[in-house]
Length: 121
Image (cartoon, rainbow, N blue to C red; front, side, top):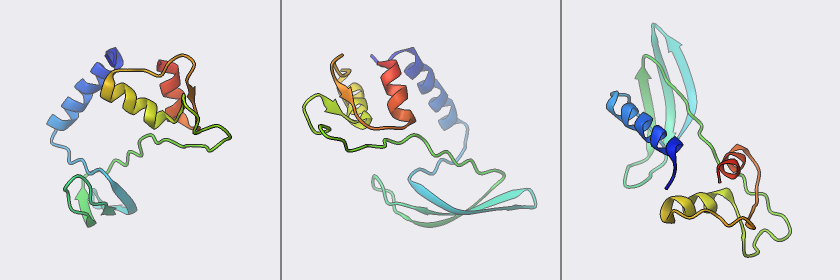
C-alpha cells in the first residue's frame, strides 16, 4: 500500500533499532558541548505517549540532532473547504486507511514535506 520506498525505509528503521543507539524523540536540544572525545547535550524532553518529560543531560561519543519534517500550514481563502487539506491530513489518510487524496484535492501549505508528499501521490 505505501510502496517500495516505505518498505526500504522500514528496513532502515529496523536496523537502527537493532544498533543499540539511544533514540530520544520529542526533545528540544538547548546546548551541546564537546571535549575529551565526548559530546554532552542538555535537552528538555516533552512528556509523550506515557513517557515522562523533563531535563536530560546526555553524554555520548556523538550526538545526532535530526529535525525531521514538519507541516507548515498556510491559511488562505478557502483552506477549510471540502477537498482542501494539509499534508498532515493527507499523510494520515494514507497511513491509516491506505487512501490517497483524489486527483482534484488541493494540498494547502508550504514546506518540503508538502512537496515530497505531492510528488509521490
